[in-house]
Structure formats: C-alpha cells, structure tokens
View 1 (cartoon, helix red, strand yellow):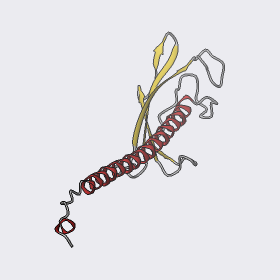
View 2: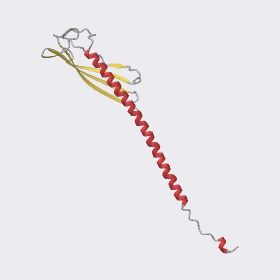
View 3: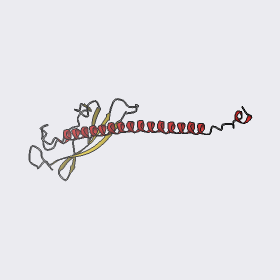
View 4: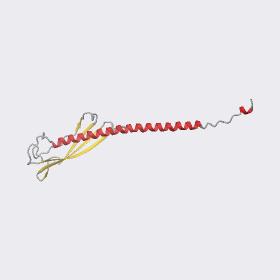
Length: 165
C-alpha cells in the first residue's frame, strides 16, 4: 500500500449539527402548539361556564321580577298594597343549569307602603342574583352577579284584581 491510500482528509461533520438544530426547533414548535391547544380548550370551558352562569342569573332575576310584580294577582293584595320583597332564596334550576349555586335577593324602596305619583301607587325593587359553580378559584370557576331594578305600579281606580296602571 502506498502512502496516498492511508492518508484520508479530515471529516467535517456539518450535517450532524444542522440535524440536531432542526430537531430542537421542531420540538420547541410542537410543544408550543400543544400548550396553545391546551389553553384554548381551557378558555372554551371557561366561556361555557360563564355563559351558563349568566343564563342562571338571568333566570333568577326573571323569577324575582315575577314574584314582585304579581302579574296574576295570586297574592290577593288590594289596590293600595304593593307586593313585599321575598326572602333571599336559593333556586334549583334544571339541566343544563343544574349544579350551579343560584341565590336571589330583593330590596324594596320604600320598604313598606308606596310612593304616590299622581294617584298611582309605586314601589321599586332591586333584585340581585349571584351565581357560582361551586369551584371559584379553580381553572373553570365562575361567579356572576346580575342586578335588575323593577318598578311596580298599581292604580287604585283601576280594575280589580290587578289594578293595572
């Protein structure tokens, strides 16, 4: 053998660092994509819980408004008497709102009697619904508070039993 065949040029190995670099970059991109996917799923779940809580709060204030307006005159009140506030109540709602803690409270102004406005009797009610899913402080914990104001009017000269204004 001659000396020419034994002497080889040194290998450079430029392909190996490039492949390692590409593997690292692709790995970082995949992990970032998975993290974003997880966050979007968590965000979606939070939006669903928030929408459920708002629907429950709306239902609770509508229930409260029905109680204080007494539209079917089931309380049997005379023309000069406006409905009192109901006691703070915890409501149980059906699916898909089941499982939410729904509380509704009422405040009346004036607390008794009524305001006379040109012969009409008025009272004003503030209804506050508070809803939470029982997991406040967790990733999908939601609390909603909705406040509604209702004015109720009776006309003592109106037709019984509603004495509508």
